Image (cartoon, rainbow, N blue to C red; front, side, top):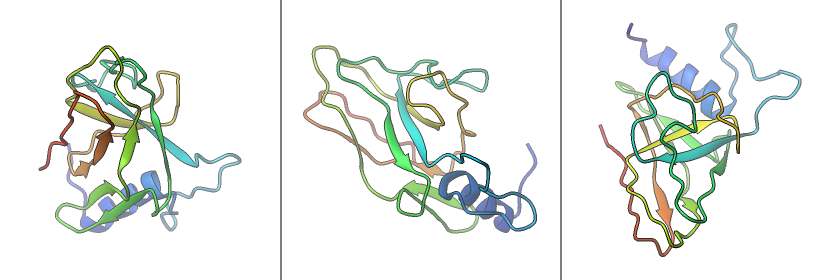
Amino acid sequence: MASFTDGTESALLKLLFNATAWANVADNAAGSPLTNLYVSLHNADPGEGGSQTTNETAYTNYARQAVARTSGGWTVSGTDPTQVVNAAIINFPQCGVTGDTLTHWESARSFRAPGCSLPQVPSVRLRVRIWNSPVRWHPRVQ
């Protein structure tokens, strides 16, 4: 895949995660722009051909979590690489009877449907907390 300049990386990630217009290229002025992204947890890589439901965990009480598409939901910063990290801890429901080993996460447009996942960007890190759960998920840090 081609490399992007630092400015392009920042503008693209801010458009996707903060709903910030990219001057003369793209804006967020659609009739009903997304206000949230829905974070899902996975027990294996969903892969390029997958959707948000591919390898999605199904531990008891699990539900995708909404994160605002604003700078209050996601922080875009740095250069070489430009990075995205959630601005606050994302709390997932307590694990019930069944557990799972979580290895991946995704953000997409849908709370329940398979959804169109956002690009899997290695420089996007996630901090999560699953309350009172035997399941522990640690983000892959580049």
